[in-house]
Image (cartoon, rainbow, N blue to C red; front, side, top):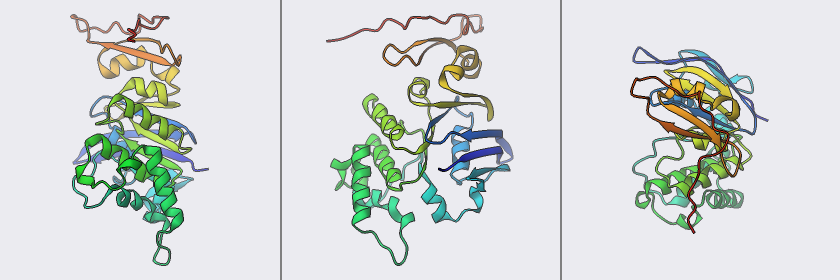
Amino acid sequence: MTHLAVRSVSVRLAGRSIVEGIDLDVPERQVVGVVGPNGSGKSTLLRTIYRVLRPSTGAVLIDGRPVTSMPRRELARELAVMAQDAPPTVELCVHELVMLGRLPHQSAVRRSGPDDRTIVRDAMEAAGVLHLADRAWETLSGGERQRVLLAKAFAQRARLLVLDEPTNHLDVKHQLDLLETARSSGATVVTALHDLNLAAQYCDHVVVLARGALVAQGHPDVVLVPEVLAPVFEVEVDRASHPRTGRPWLVFSPRSAEGELSAGTRQPTEPPEMEHHP
């Protein structure tokens, strides 16, 4: 199994501290959600994990080895990435783009073969884009592009999967489908999420960042609580239980007129009443 660790990682960009002193041990075969307000350092931390950025201090380790010392092809066999910013113009069809996920497993003497094509087909099916196989990349919607990039990451067959804001541009159904698929992939998943309720439903471990610092980490039941979230997001937070899963369900409202937070003082034991439509 592959073990991912972040040891005292700080990142400075343009002379400004973006991430400061982050320590994480990522549980194997679990879904780890990184949450926090805009500008909290989520994407910077993920980009440091997958080596787009180098830490100013500290190290990201895979099985005890710094990612900065691993050959690119070897790292790509261990870690697959679905980045937040999709390439705007790629003159490839979907099948060809997903096939790029097999490059780390090929060499000058080993080109793509039947096994690679089977893996690519399975990856596209898992991501729900098999029907788009012959479509040109530039004709796809934002949501379709997100799912194609997920299929490419699946095609790498890496044991670590890093997803940076993977639910952007997706409707509710495809948000749930994507996270269900990632969760069932068998990989260790590290994902930045804006939606705290998605984090509550799909993550085994949640990391909360604020202003580049680690505020809390642990199981959603422990971390996604009003006393942690209210000061970080500067809103009032009420927590209930999801009526189907029993996991935390969060409701947000603006600060009171006096600018004080009353979050943490109310923790309803019953979920909010929900409308049901035939």
